[in-house]
Image (tube, rainbow, N blue to C red; front, side, top):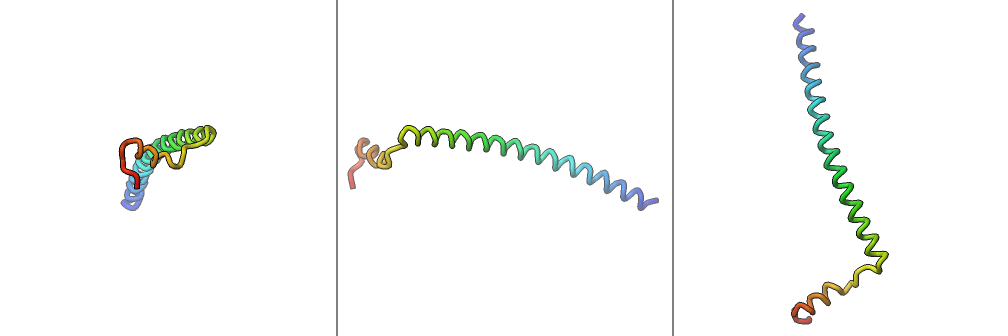
Amino acid sequence: MSGFKDMLLDVLKLTDEVKRMNKDIERVESVMLDVDRRVVRLETIVDIAKAQGGPNHSFRRNNLYTEGVNRP
């Protein structure tokens, strides 16, 4: 009879572990969906920037010059 009791306790422990892991997976899924939304927003920004002609590749250099940084 103790064998059955041990098996029942193991099943209960496993059930609790599965429930805990399910909650962890739900949290990870929530974070993943948030990251996915952010990536989609970034992709949209990049697509809009490309459609508008994109940034001038020398912008940073020109911007530094206008801020009083010495030219190399």
